[in-house]
Image (cartoon, rainbow, N blue to C red; front, side):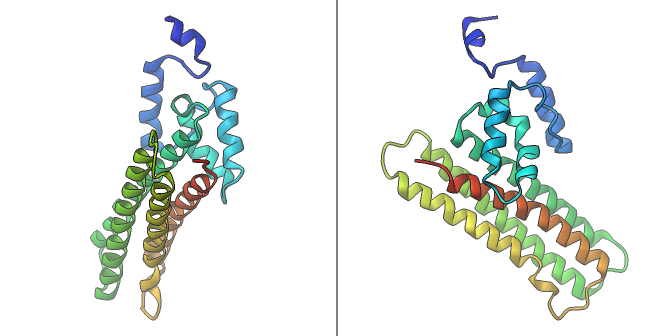
Length: 203
């Protein structure tokens, strides 16, 4: 083991890290939390206490402890990445509703609208992540870049909320409603948590 690994409190076997991250991507389970040093996991837990859904925040972000270490910006990037991944999963779940038998024209139109909304939300989150990338290491215009990050995040939240607006005044089956609502709620919570972490970021 090299000297850098000996001095880094958050380093551990890279192969184990990569394998476990792949498991997390597939199952969204915090399998790395118990393997990361407490310095890293405690930082994430403390940071998550400021979010709207602290338990979900810690569960979704603790697997990133070895790479985040104790970096607030790194934690925000991880939160955005997790949210984008969840939004893509939601997009897949909602899209599969169109394949179900018995879907009415009204339901199909509502599903289509939601797919477009979630797709727009993903684009917004990507722009926010891009702006965060520009913020890291920036020596000037930090406030402008942070404003961009928050603007894109707010747009993502609006798009996610719009996903269920199509229910109003329409005859939609409980199955379609519940599937869309539950999927949308999941990414809405993650987006809210990510924005909370960003709002507490000192630039």
